[in-house]
Structures are given as structure tokens and as C-alpha cells.
Length: 196
Ligand code: SF4
Image (cartoon, rainbow, N blue to C red):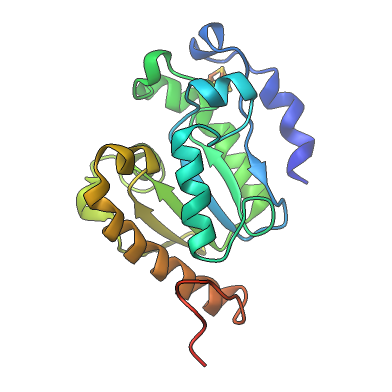
């Protein structure tokens, strides 16, 4: 169970991010889910509450999930690349990502997802290809390590660039197709119903 590793992660001081953050944000969702969403790191609200994706971008993520008929505690597990908030929400440094990566890899080993949605450049570069540009990688499946990986834009980017929402909806429909193919053929969604 993923909860068995929570105390280790919450007690981590492996990098400098911990000294400026209020707390470590472990992740949350359904521990049995085979669909995982991965973001970059906690923001101010996440740092305050100790939960992932609970600020404005998190509310948008919840809406994105609702559009494909999902909720965070039933259908998915939500993680971040780094578990402590980078100051001023800057992009985590390579050494911070490297320090935190063993936590993320262990979480993925335990959750063993079939489908992973990578939210933005940082998780995509960390887990798929360090050189990748998210504008080119998004919307294309990568099959690796017995998992299907889908890069897309981070919800925080959509708050700045609402014109990207159409692309993300297109990516989410691909995720939903894959979910029905691999996990639950009857999974329904309000805006993208099952084709019978
Ligand atoms: S960001 Fe990760 S590696 Fe750094 S202190 Fe927090 S949990 Fe540990």
C-alpha cells in the first residue's frame, strides 16, 4: 500500500526545498487506481494544506477530471515530481528533482498505473525525455515500462493560456479512450459518452 511510505516521505529533508516549505505534500487519490496524474510540485495553497492540486490549478484539474466522468478519490491518484514547494513557485532545479525522484519512482512502483498523465514540461522531462518540448510532446502516447504515458499541458498553464484548453480536452479524450480500453470499458463521461 502506498500509505506505508508516507511517513518516510513526510520526514524527508534530502534537498533544500524542505527548509522553505511548510510541509511535504505526499499525493492523494485512490490507492487502487490504475490512472495517475503527475504535476510539477506544490504551490502556495498545496504547501498550506499539505494536499496536491488544491489551489486554482487544482480546481481546474478537478473540472478536467469531472469532464471525463472522474473524481480524484475514486478514479485517479495525483502526484508531483517534487513534494516540497519551490520558492515563488519557480521550476524545481535539476538537483531538487534528482533528490525527490526516488520517492516518485517508489510511488509509481507501488501504484503500478497502466496510464500516466504528465501535466506539463517538468514531469514530462523528468520521466520521459529531458530534451522534450511540451508543445510538441503533448497529445502523443508513449508506451514504456508497460505503461501508457500521455503528456499534456499543466492546468496552471491553462489559467494563463486559456486557448490551450482545446488541446487538453483533445488529450483527455485520448486518455479516456485508453482508460476504457485498458481499465473500465463501461466508464461513462458527461461530455464524451461511451460509444456503444
Ligand atoms: S522536495 Fe523531495 S527530496 Fe526535497 S526535501 Fe522535499 S520530499 Fe525530500
